[in-house]
Length: 81
Image 1 (tube, rainbow, N blue to C red):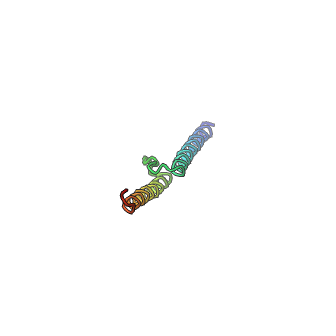
Image 2: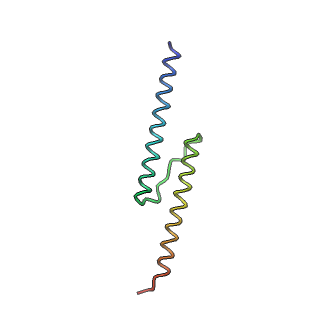
Image 3: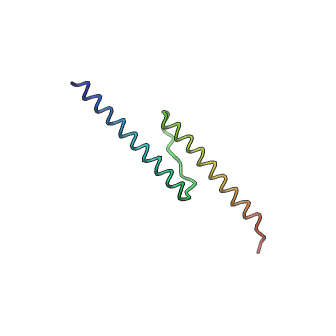
């Protein structure tokens, strides 16, 4: 009986972690969608979720740099008035 109870607790903890990870991912994506290009995922994980966070952070960084470059080009192409 103890093993079953321990396994149930472990499964609940795993599911809770998965929900937290999903909520952080969703919050990050929503912030990005709303124009916050500086938002990043936490980088404190080494499992699959950590790899997903790293990949998302790379995409966010590339987009942030691209927006900065577009702004720079826009300013450079505008005649001083």
